[in-house]
Length: 378
Ligand code: SF4
Figure 1 (tube, helix red, strand yellow):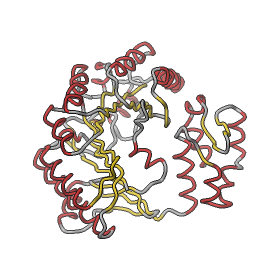
Figure 2 (cartoon, rainbow, N blue to C red):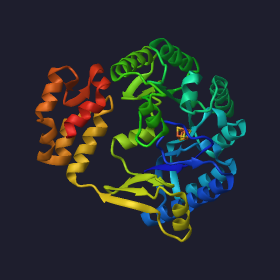
Figure 3 (cartoon, rainbow, N blue to C red):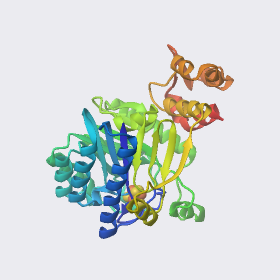
C-alpha cells in the first residue's frame, strides 16, 4: 500500500499553480495536520485490524517544509503504530528551497523520511519571479547542502521548462547547474497554463509570453537528451533517475497499485474505487473532528475506465504497455486498444514501437506523449 498526504499551505502563491492550497498560517496548519492524523487512524481502522504493509509514503503540497517538525514526528509515530513499513520503504517529502531549514532537514530525516524532493524549478530567478515564485539561486544550493548534511542520499529535484523568456541556452544552463548538484532524480516538466490561475490571465493579457508549442517540444527533446547523456535514465515521460532511484511512489500510481489519500483534496484508489477528499480545509477539519471520513466523491471504476487508465499510465513509462497482460486482465475488450488502427498509424509514423509484445513510445513519441495517449483512449 502507498500513502499520499496533502499539506495545503504555502507562504506565497505561485501564478501557475492550480494545486489546492492556501496562505500558510501556523495554528491552522497545526490543527489541520492533527486532523490528517485522525483521518489516517479512521482509514486504517476501516481497512482492518492487521497492520498494513506500507511500501511508500509521499507528503506533497503545498509546501510541506513549512510543517512544524514536531507535528511531522508525531504523525509518523502515529501512522507507524497502524502500519508496517516494508524494509525497503520509500518515504518522500516535497520541500521548497527557500523554506527548508537545517532543523527541518535533520528532524524529517530522523523521523524516517528517506527521500527529499527539492522544488528547484529553475535557476532563472527572473523568470520565476514573473510567476511569483520566491526563491533565489542561493536558496537552491543551500537546500541541497542542508538535505545532504542532514543525511539524505536520495535527493530528487524538479525542473520546469517552457518558462517565460527561457531560451535553449538558458535551459541548457539550468539543466547543467542542476546536474552539478547531483540529485538522484530529476522531474523535468513543462510549465502549463491551467485555467483559473493568475498565469492564465497574464498570458491572456499579453503580460507574459510563453514559448510556442513547437519550441516547448524542442526544449523537451533537448533536455531529455541532455539528461540521458548525463546518465539519467528516463523511466517515464517527465521522470529521470540515476542508479535505479526511480520514485517507487509514483511508480505505484502508474502501475495501478492501491494507495490511500489523506488530507484536503487528496485522492486515493482502493479496491477499484477512486475517491477524493473535500478540497476545503474548514470542512475537512470539521468532518474529521466529528469522526467522519472527509470523502467528497467516490467512483467505482468499471472495466472500460480501468482499461483506459492502464493504457494511459503504462504508455507514459519506458516499460510501455504489456499487451499480453492487458488481454489477461481485460479479455476481448483489450482488442479495442491493441487492434486500434491509431496504434498501427503511430507505429508506422515511428512514434510507437511494438517491442516483444510491449507497446512503447519512441523518442519522438515521448515528445507527443499527451496527444498520442489522448488519441488512443478517445
Ligand atoms: S509553492 Fe508549490 S504548491 Fe505552493 S503555490 Fe507554488 S507551486 Fe503551488
